[in-house]
Length: 448
Image (cartoon, rainbow, N blue to C red; front, side, top):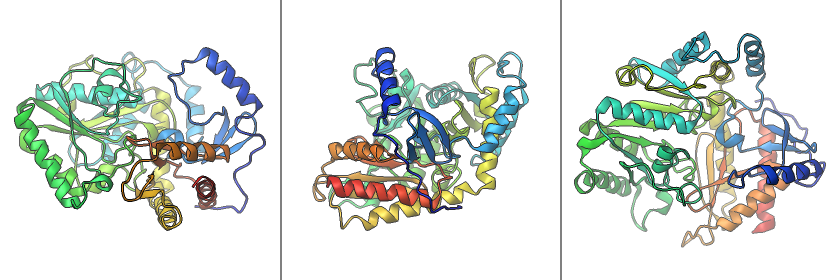
């Protein structure tokens, strides 16, 4: 990537500045508190990996709208395509009068998703909608009801997606009852494996438990699908082994269960492959995608084997705004941009820099318990004690807050809220990334 010696961060006021402070008052009076925010500022404009707020403060964005902006803020080719499209028509509604961008993006996704089999794709608005519809299709195709997801998994905030999600607070507490016929299996967390248990032993134990589940809880004949994040996102960027993922797929094949890969946060180059499931040499039956599919436009996709996707009759899937022309046009341009600018390769470079930096800081800061990453999907787990591995949620929150005040947008994650997660746009320059990592290191020196 082209670099520059000019510093990117420019703070003209404290965070929040006066204009943002005024908007925060209006927000408090008009928007429910349940809608959370990480940075107490309001955006004015963005470009690449930089965001400027209404007070003129410039931030390096390592959050990327929670993994939505692999192509960066306002990529020129996407902006140009949107400008051209919006002058033609905005939304005739695909269920009423169809339009070519929908077909074009479906063709692209059928081509680039794993597997050489015939595929079909349709579009919705959000990741949660994609998950809900993937489950609908799996149930329709198999004639079965039950769905298995994994502990620490996150699949959305709507009723079924929330039921499949594992983290209680803030996603499920007080919102029950939940959708029936949803169950949880265990997902490997090697850093927190029982003392003396190897990764191989943990994998085999969890796979055995999954087989035992069919004997103790629900027979395999009633399971429609198992849905898995190839790398857990909100769960703390937990990366399973190839052995585990392939083991789950074999169990699915053995029992006629569909394998759904939830690629909503992991897709479109984030992990150093176009899709994370490619790291594990597994071809899913159905995939859900959203976030970075269209550079921030609200669109999601469900892609699957053609015979599975055709199980639903006309009118049984879809939605009024699903696959808007703007989202489809943006999606086509993002896929072209990822290919032309070699952003999949760039993800690996970004990941290596982040992981290398924090591994080198382990001896300096005894709060760094684990550093992990797959491509540019990287995480640092903070603990109070390296031996007990007690999570340090408070320190993590303070690091996030102090980084934001110093012009670097960082997010937290994890079941215990003690993981710093990195989701920078893949167009970030080396200098921008180094500058941001310097800020984080400085914050750790101040707080630890």
